[in-house]
Image (tube, rainbow, N blue to C red; front, side):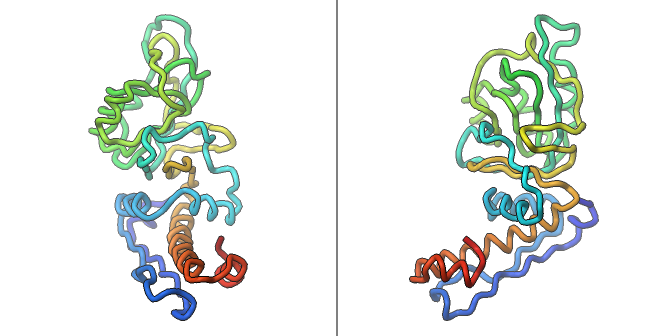
Length: 251
């Protein structure tokens, strides 16, 4: 996703539906607009949800973009949207000459609107905790996604900052894993993630949006989300599911 594209104003047209097909109270017809990446990410968190974005990716031929369902938010109300800062980890055994490897270097170069995304090793310990959350949060990062465990759950939740993981497990990482690289290509499940690809996560999962198609995917997702609201109104007004799908092509 180019900076030029996301820093230019973007308008997403509203879904148009004949008034006689829906109840009088219809969703707003105001277009979705943004002029910066930060505004776009805020709108994604406010108005989008992973099923609709996943559907758009499927339609565009990107059919392996969800991270495994083991990865979920600490709190079901957590949502995140931002750019992946990829991190690669390995198992180690016992005290190391450089504890944690490149972990602190990876944390210290996090940027605004980035999401710390880590994978690697055999998940023998926690990959995230209270102090890592504080470090990333004060640097302006927008969340963390771990293909593994977290710990310090109450202290992480107190910071009101989104963390997605397999769940909680208190075992320390210093003698069990370390970061060996960051801002490098990684794979999680069937998804290949490059540094700078977009991540979008909610209670239903975490999606990878390739940077080169991100603007198109997000614009189409806003259109589909608006369309789903129209279809729901029509069904609640008495339209059958068969007729609704035939008319709107959304289900």
